[in-house]
Image (cartoon, rainbow, N blue to C red):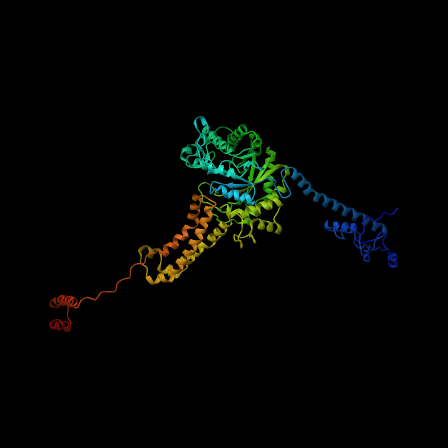
Length: 620
C-alpha cells in the first residue's frame, strides 16, 4: 500500500498532489501550495508556524520542490523529512516545558512568578538611623515594603554582668528601637531580623577592647575567651527581646580577616590538623548552637564569604550546615551567574538545606557616595534573578535587599535612605515581576510620584512625592553644583588666582580694586547656597537626628561654603599712604651736610667737587 504524506503545506487541500501532462512524461511531481484557498485552516496555520518557530523552513521539513526523482524515492524523502521535523518539534517542546516545570516547582518552594518570594529590605542603622516617624510614613505610603531593620548601635549594648550574664538594660537604652517597633510590625510575615551590628560597634569601646583578636584592631573577636561568647549571647538576647515570633536571625560573621592572628589563636593553630577555617567554623557552630538552645524556632543566618574557600569535606564534617543558612552576597552589576550557581551546588553537597541571596539597593558603589546610581543596583538584581532561575527552586529561601549606610563603623556616611527610595522601589518591582520593562518603570514612577525616573544617570528631571523626595532633590543640587560652582569662582577666575591667593589672604596684602572684580559674585553665590543648605538642613531634621545632619553637612557642605565665606569676609589691607613732602628747611639742612662731607673728601684729594655746588653753598 502506498504511504501517505504525513503533513500538508498551509492552505493545501486534502486532495493528492496534481500531475500535469509534463509531469507524467518526466516522472516529476510538484508539491504545490493551494494559493486559491482564501481561508486556510487554523490548524494548518498553527502547524506551519510551529515548524517555522522550530527553526525548520520548507527545506528542513521536506516541503521543497522535488523534481527529477521517482515516486518511491520522493515518498521516502518526504517521510524522512517529516520524521526529522517532528523530532525537532518534540525537542523544542521539551525545552520550552522545562522553565514551566521549574516555575511550578518554584511556586511551591519559595519562588513566585517574578523571583524569590521572600524579599527583605535591610535598613542599616549603624550610620544614620532615621526617625521612627519617617519609617512609619514610608511604610504607610508603601515605599518600599516590609523592612528588616538592623539594630546596630541604635540601642547600645549593656555589658555582660558577673558570670557572663547580660546586665539588665538601662532605662532609655532601647528607646529608638522600641519607637520603631511601635510603628512597624517587625515580626510581620517576613519573620526575620538582622542580628547585631559588626563587632566593631562593641570592640571599639575601651571596656570591650580586651576581647579583640588582635589588640590594635577592633575588627574581630577573640573566639577563645569565654567572655567573648557571653558578649555575643548578650547581644543576641537584647535584640531578640525587641522582636517576637522570629524565624531567622542573622549572626553576621563576614570578613573576619584577622581571625587567627591573635596570640591564643596562633597557639591553637600550632596543634595538629587545626586550621583557620576550622577555627572559624568552630566559633560559628558555638554561636549557632547558642541560638538554637535559647530560641529553638529560630534559624541562624550567616554571611557566606568566609565559607566560599573552605573545602567541601571540611565544611560537611563541621556540623555547621545543619545549624545555619548561608546568605550569599554580591553587590556587583555584573556578578558571575554561573559562579553563583556552582557555589549553591557546593553548599547543597555540603549539607545546607537552604540559602539566601543578598543584593544591594544602595551603599555599595562608593564609600562616600551621596547619590544612588539606580542602574547599577537594577543590574545587580537582574543578575540575581538569573541565578535564581538557574538554581534548584527548593534551595532558595529568599533575598535581602541590603541598604548599607557606612562601609564600617569608622567610615563616612554614604547615600542616605531617602535618596535611595527610588532605587529600592525599582529593585523590588524588578524582583516581583521577574525583570524590568517600560511598563514596570511607569508603575514605579506612579508609585514615587515622578514623571520621569532616570536609572542610568544620577539625575532625574522631575520631583517626586514619596517621603523624603525633597531631600533627594536638594542633595542632588549640592552634589552636582556646590563644589563645582565654588571651584569655578575660586580656581578659574584670574583675579582670584592672580591677586587673591592664600599667600595674599594670609598676609592681608590685597589690592582693594581687585576685590571689586569677584567679591560681588562670591556674595551672590554664598547667598544662594546658604538658602539651599537651610532648606536641606530643615528637611533632614524631619528625617534624621541632629548628629546625622551635622555629620553629613560637615562632610558634604561645609568645605565648599567655608571657602566662599573666606572670600566674602576677607579683610582688605588699608591703602598705602602717599609719600610725604619734607619741609624746605629740612631739605636744605640735609643738602648742606652732604656738601660738607663731599668737601672734606675734596680737600683730601679723593674727590673733585663741581664748582657749582660750592657756589650754591656760598650763596646758601
